[in-house]
Image (tube, rainbow, N blue to C red; front, side, top):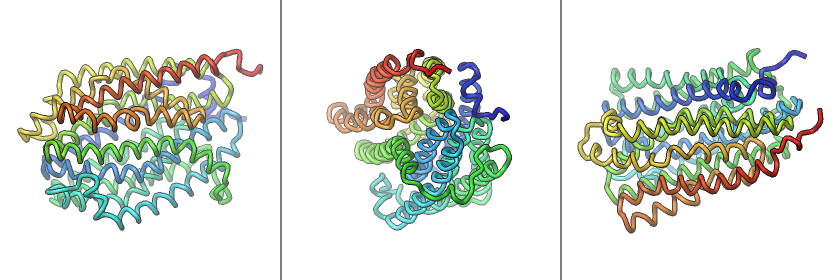
Length: 453
């Protein structure tokens, strides 16, 4: 039998494998993040700073629905990686078919509900005052494209599970490049304003889906599913749900965080503070792309080798991923501490926003050098199928620490309390993750636990 790309996950040297997986993932995330960043710059320069705040109101809702696809993708891909590692292709095919069915049913249902309750959702997420009307225009159009985004996010994780990181990278680059081109046409040339920005985003999602659809039909994919694979099977659905819930819960907490942050900052500093948070939020998506790339590259490596009982390789992948991610996170930290004013100026020349954003950015990224351990630790438990531990560690930072802190600290420090909540939660979450990860390595990743071949 010919060697497949997925089998490389169990044989190539870990450092070489991590670079092979992480570089395409990082490039894909970079391009996607640049898209969000430049899209925000275009909107700010061509429409106005209020439009930036409007998009920030819509993002948590649309991303939460799309995260249904991501969660189904990550949960199913963990199963697929381990199934391929255990030489069980039939389970991998059934899992992929169930992923597609679940994604379609759930995201379309959520989009219908999201459009039906639009008048209650947008104000709840901070769509108030001058922000509401442009937010409504953007929200209505973007939601039509969200099922395509969800299917794309689901499919992208499966491509990685197959050991095809370059195709996953292409899938992330296509919507990013097309969105920027369409932004220029719809906003700058045709002067369509918020509607133009929304249609550019929606069509970009469709283009991404078209590429991923082609990939799975082509000879590049090992997963050739048939009609009977689409039928939902309870054991597979439950396993996808238990693991995927980790990702969904993470995005749910992110959306809730946006809801709280937009409202708290609106009450403390008005539209200016919401805009400052929108800019900092874009940098959170963009600046950490190499760290997220390593995390994405680490997932299939850990999952495949755990499924193949190669525990020494799993342990090596953990240490290597943390080392690489921490080094890159430190570089990001240095750049953001030195150049926050220049970064802010890319988005807007509004004097009040320019005054508030740089110090906020410094606080938000103050603990960046240590976050690699927290991200890799949570990803490890998800990769090996331990849903409870993965859920706990994923929700630590924002769910258990950050959200309580943004209510408590402003009572003593005002708006500053919101910003200092970021590094405090990073430090606390990293300490707890280190404790759990160290215990797991000592208990379950000893080479003597590997079966004799």
